[in-house]
Image (cartoon, rainbow, N blue to C red; front, side, top):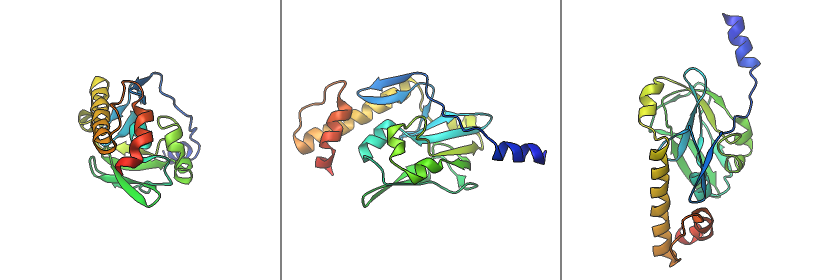
Length: 190
């Protein structure tokens, strides 16, 4: 009924959900139970057909502290694999692809006002938006989870490491300090 809808929309408790188990993948955090798009957006399934979306630790470290995150307006239609979120640092802008299709139901105003928060706590307080999905099962089949997501992140780290080695002449990156080495040499590759 209308009263229930009004009550649920205006009196929701927005608790911070923290991942139970966060893996260390060559220095980058990756929570268990989250789905990942190859464009480094993550999806956490919430209630019914609603999902929470944010950027992974790898992307946020590559871009550095963000100045601005522009999310679509509530009610906007998103399509999986199409540009949805704009992130900005200095004069640089990048688009992030939507990991699912659906309608934007909530935007994290805290992250919109303080974009750097996304990098501080990417998998809990740093979420960007929530989406009511059209066909969650179909969308999740195109995302990575568990060992598939870990393998993709390792491949991306390796690819970036090779680029850093070739461009800057830096030594090969050791197994567990990729995050620190990449951050130190990123400006050298532009």
